[in-house]
Length: 294
Image 1 (tube, one colour):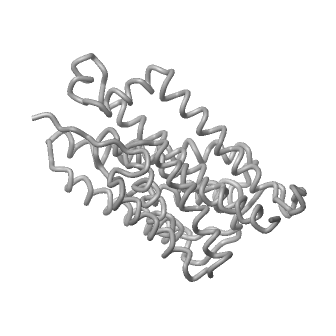
Image 2: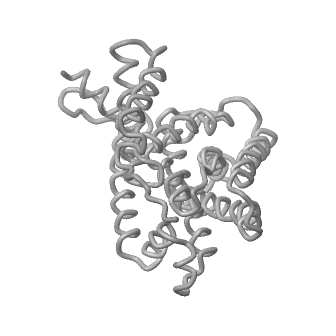
C-alpha cells in the first residue's frame, strides 16, 4: 500500500507537468484551431532561462523564477506576433501556420543548442535532498511544491478564464472570432495574450519538471512534446480542463506501468489508453461534438 501511494505521488508530479503544458495547447487550439508545435520547445526555453538566471547570472531563485516565466511568456507572444499573425492577416490556410510552428520549434531548439551545448546540466532546485514523511514514505519538498503549485495555478487560471474580461474575451474568441471582433474586441490582442499565458504556464512546468529530475538539456522539449500533445487529445483538444485531466491520466499510467509491468512499457501503455479512448469517444474525455453551421 505504501508503494502504491508513493507511485501515485510520482504519477501526480509527472502528470502535473503534462497538465500545465497541455493548457497552452488547448488554449491556442480553442481560439485558432491550430496545434502549436512550438509549445513543447517553449517548455525547454522556460527551463533553460531559469537555469541561466540562477547559475550563470547568479540571480536569487525567487526572482529568477518570476523573470523566467515573464521572459518565456514574452517569447511565446513574440513568436505569435512574428510568425502566426502575418499568416492570419493574409488568410493563409491552417496547415501553413502549422508548418510555421514546426519550423519555429526547430529554430528555437537549435539556438539553445548553440548557446548551451548538447550536454546534460545539473539543474538548481529548492530544498535539496529535503523530504517529509507522509503515510510512512518519503515525499520530497520539490514534489510537494510541484503538486501544490499546479493546483493553485489551475484554480487561479479557472478564475481568470471565468471571471475576468480578458478570460471572457478568450472564451468568446473560442466560440466565434468574427462575432467577437464585431463586438469591439481585438482578437489579435486576445491571441497574443493567449500565447503569453500558455507559454508562461509551460515555463512553470519546465522549471518544476527539471527541478524534480535535477537535470536539463536541449532535448527535454521534444521528450515532453509527444506526451503533452497526447494528454491534450486524450482530455479533449480545445478544452483546457480536458488537457489537465489527460495529463494526470497519462502521468499516473506511465508511473504505474513502470512500477508494476516494466519501464520499457510505460510509453506503450499510455498510448494504448489514448487509442482506446479515441475509439470510444473521438472527441476525448471532456471534448464535445462540434456542430458546424452551413
